[in-house]
Length: 218
View 1 (tube, rainbow, N blue to C red):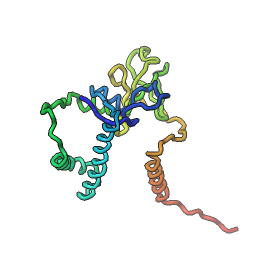
View 2: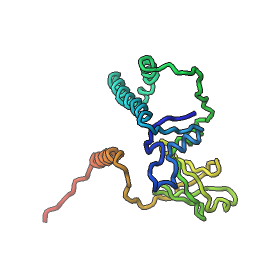
View 3: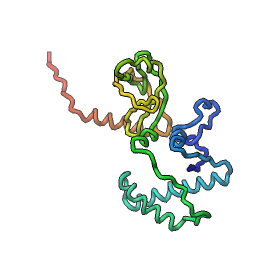
View 4: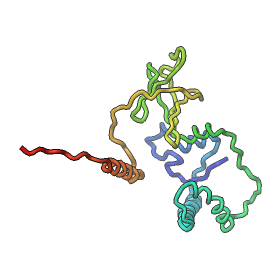
């Protein structure tokens, strides 16, 4: 029913100049699931959150290393064992035994949409929109004038799939053309990942056979 966290920018918008965007992607997903976000305010409350995060980030990583686990699938299979051991040593008896966890009532398709990166776009007169340096054209049957200049929601899933939603319904679209690429703007947290991707691309390019240049003497 509620998610308890610190005031990290993942959970809430902290910058005053971002008041128009009053919620983050995480907060939006929690709202769609009906989960309230409670941000710790006092030093004592923030300390409880940070201690738990530090314990998990430190202890769990070492446990994975001791079990020689280095892939997500095996790590997910190990998590129930880790949780049981963690609770056995650190769990505190709650004041109330009532279980307030709710059953998941959403389909897998609904959850994929909720846990996606969502952004709003306005369709053009030709039912086109621009997103991530690409043009998407909505495909409609019959008269599509009702969609002209309509606001739609683009949902990009974790695996890169794109869904365009209008009034809760998915729209068929055609990937029209690629726009001229501009320089990427990335934050420092993903800079190393971007460099690694460039190095992999460079290694693949250099691995291709190169035909020797033939010269003739005069």
